[in-house]
Length: 85
Image (cartoon, rainbow, N blue to C red):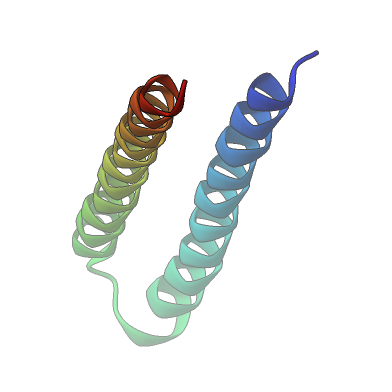
């Protein structure tokens, strides 16, 4: 496999791992809060869903930004090499 494919797999797998850790952490915290503090479980679930959605949205936007930056630099490099020759 090429290096760019491996970089994409690595970047996506790290983002998925981060979301999974976020879900596990929020589930454990929700369990504690529901069992010992408050019985308004629906509100905790709503807030955690919103936080998870924001994490996923930021990961998607950052991945697109990185792709556009790499594309821009590759175009600049190609145009610079053409001027040299």
